[in-house]
Image (cartoon, rainbow, N blue to C red; front, side, top):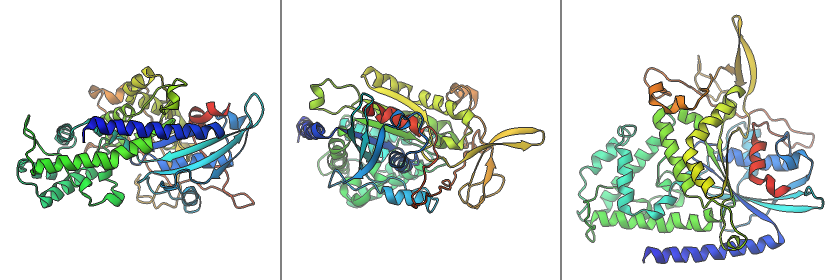
Length: 487
């Protein structure tokens, strides 16, 4: 079927879904907020903390509607989409508060609906329906595939695999691929072998010590119920330039399955979920990239550029808004700011702004509002000045996770004071190879080592409900993402 026909069908479905959403808003103003981020960025923690802050309150001075006392309450409503799993807020909150463990990472899409009762600044009463859509950031990196042929995908994937930072990790896959004859007859066993080696390479790239971010196809690392299906049993192979793949050849099989992946996996996600969003936050584990070193940082920059290129950013006119959602606000958030002393929070934010500056220019040119923030949706540490001889050093205190290393190995039970060091005053120190930034990827040690901490101890009130959870700049994120709809 011609690609233009698929696009026409998709556009018609998008228009129908948007009209249904707009009809619902006539009786109940609704905002669809997308929450995403790449591996280990804290999507589930952020979503849980956001819901808890809206329903339980807390110290949120920058979130004006809450600070001014204009939010009467927020309550959970029935799941809006019958075919989408509900975000397990209660289970994730119990994991954080009762077990003091971080919830499992996001591996599928989920939703939750909140009704926020508030008093507009001009007086009266109103209710905003907030639909929260939580999904893996790796799925975002698949969206550009809709515009790419299999030949384009294969060439780009192999270029990345052969780059110096990845070559050793990709060695088993590249060695196998170098002996592949693309015009050989299609062979299911060979396709499965190559797909398995390609998936192993992508998984090795995601390991914390390496921390690569640009790893499409996203479902290869989180296949869910598609595991073992032909749509996930393909790999990039070198093609003969200018030659169409012969029928029934291995190359033709790979191309067909790549197109099936786009049709059965990527396109439905775009049409049914992503293209219906109004606001978006992209969470970024920048500290892990800094730990891993300059190659990881450069890879993260490329991934973020690709992520924002996928957004339908920009302001709608009143007429176009009837037929198309456009994402009017996008927030990039560097998470785990509590792993640093507050003196480095603005520096972390500056590094993030430098990472996304190309993407920012593109989105702002389309009329979207963009911001960056360094935050911690759940603050796991507190700050203190610790004496070292005659000197007083700024430290963070928390309970490092079991197995983490400082001077000794931590047991996950005792508190420890950690000196995380200072980020550079200028982001240029991390992006200019002449300045010698290494991260921890070098054999002789590195510039930074950020530990992982257990969640904080959260007390309960007389009714047994958890008290507000400490955070860093969560209120700033809330104000940017939904504050204008609560005026």
